[in-house]
Image 1 (cartoon, rainbow, N blue to C red):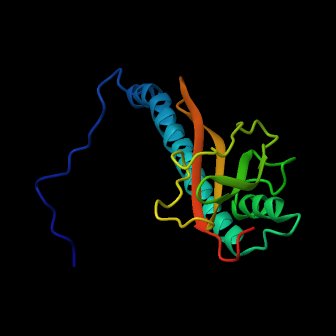
Image 2 (cartoon, rainbow, N blue to C red):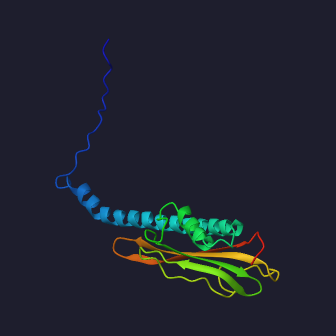
Image 3 (cartoon, rainbow, N blue to C red):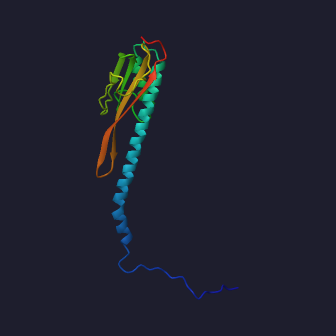
Amino acid sequence: MSRPTSAVRPSRLVPARGEHGAAAVEFALVLPILVIVVLGIVTGGLSYSNAIGVQNAVREGARFGATGDVSSLSWTSDVIARVRSTQFDDGTTAADSSTSVCVQLFKAPNTVSKWECSIGQDDGPVITVPATTADQPAVPANLSTGACVVRVLAARKFKINGGLTSWSGTIVRGSTAMYERTCT
């Protein structure tokens, strides 16, 4: 049995003469803009991820410091090491880390009994924990006299590359946790 033939045949689109390279030219014009946008989105996302990582690291460091023994000589360096080790994309020591970390034991009403800062060596920003309660990280207003809190502050530089231009700055995050033992 033979197939019925149709009187209407599909037409073939044949580009007009001189339009053979138009798609390649349009792609070449759009590609640099597309690359710049994608590069900006990727580096912006990485910077945002770093900011979240720093926030989680200082929170973990404050909790770790609040449960540790302040009378230990290595308490401050242990808290700093915990902050650095909590970040997934940074070194664990000051020699290979780009994060600067400060830890402080703050005793109410207005005494700093222990503190230490460690500046990251890979272009780490210089930071210090403020001595007053008004500055970040904040101390609870209802802190009774003689009670202590652990204050942890961390800073890390970031850069968002947009191809033709870039934006850079410093991520600074802090956290406070009540010290759970008797404060000295």
